[in-house]
Image (cartoon, rainbow, N blue to C red; front, side, top):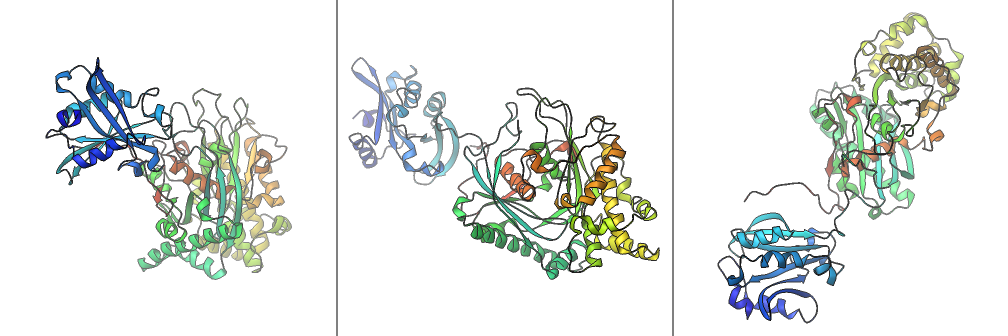
Length: 575
């Protein structure tokens, strides 16, 4: 009777039968009511029913929401804050819905867009406006408001372990690498929720390389040569890589006995085709559709958009995973060698609660094993690399050629940022240098030894030139090397010798990832899984002091898979 007397108005929709059905649920406990009284006289009430039309917004099911259906105050008592007290009571931790039903996570209601009095009462009671939409059923514009329980407010990102695939095809062009990892929740900075306050913990579940056939490898190298006249071939290449990557993800999960429903995300770097600007192939939507799993990838353009090179990506992994512990007295030099090479100068983590005062630096020195491997294959087509450096150890460095190679324009850059791409050291350049060596009577064995020395020397020279006072003149002997070439004892010897000469330091031994508790075989796949994981969590995944960007960015695009529920955006709705 109170509702009929005071509820209906041009701004308050009160259909008779639905209201009766709502009130009938008071007997079952599905509807709850809070009342305001003047003595024994009812002067206002508010009712909420478990469920409602907006429970799908939460992703937690119908029993997790309560919808405010009726909100009525005797007009002769308006102006006495009765409405605000009722809306506040509905969400009071001791007297509101959560005192009655602990499963409820969110309260919703709707009001006529012009019902300023009701909307204001809900806002003052702690509710927030979600959106305003054209309400065809009521022939009006309707505003949606909600209140989220403090116990139900989700932490940023994931609060439990997340299983993520990392996939990439590197500059060595030897195959597609796939790994599966469990990532623990992030340790975020107290001052910037998009920054980290410490390293990330992860566990490798499965990891495998699926080698290219010679035909596939030559096709990829043909794309990277950037000389195809028909642009459709590049479009087809992007889609084909998406299909290849999807198949390899499916293969790994099947071989590991892991159901796709256990995997939340794929982080894909793709296959680099161009480095200036960066261009990676492997369409994300193809992968999402053919695996059913949401994919994050195409990370580099965000850094480029902020003025950076989009490279080195390894600086991100290094500044998270390789930094010395707080209080350490030396920086660490983190080296990665694949087809090309990268270096990160890693300061210790700051003490807990203290701001960053030392900034990581990094660059791509240039070549890695790409020219070495091409030379090995020219010597013996059945071999892909120089096992333990036995071939190179048997040869002699040609100092004349080495000096010529070091005059390459890439090595003449004098300021950071410096990022390498496949177009800096293409296979055509290797052919030119090999022809030059042959014209001088230099054997392929000696050319291999010279390329091995070139890679070691250029890295040490780059550290001496760009490392700064925390790196040069004996400031640190903490050097860590990763990549398959770390198993090449001859290369490691030459790298150590060149570092001691260039940095004026005595190095007992060059460390590897196992020395600090990380896996060598899977780290690069973990890095790209990490890029996707950071993207999903809205955490910076590029280091501007290494890439040259004006600010840190969260890089990546997300292609929804069958497991995607929703995205959450900060937005304002115009009325």
